[in-house]
Image (cartoon, rainbow, N blue to C red; front, side):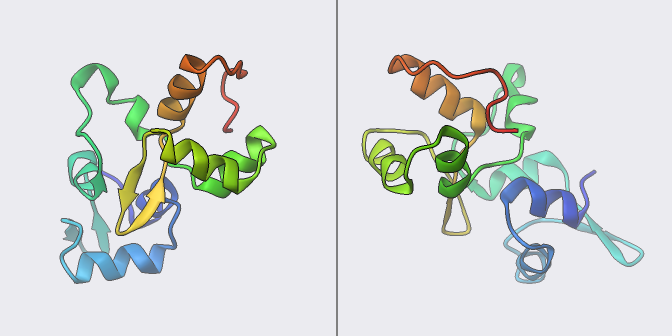
Length: 122
């Protein structure tokens, strides 16, 4: 089970935002004592993207990245990341905020001939 802080880190949001989404029933969570807990299927249900298949579960447990994270790690502009989005870079929208799975970004860029070191996003 994931804590509010775990989910906030995964989405790249503040814990207060996650708590607010729980209170408005945008995320299914259970309350144990004074803390909320969530499981991965409920977290992924908040992402506007495909539900991960069994072989890819660990890949989709990675923290999501924002445009600024990608731009900084790859030393490109945010505008370049936005151009890649227009060209089909896979996104995962979380409550109206665009996020990226680092493995999807890696796969997409490698298909386009961009050589990336393993774990470039960490």
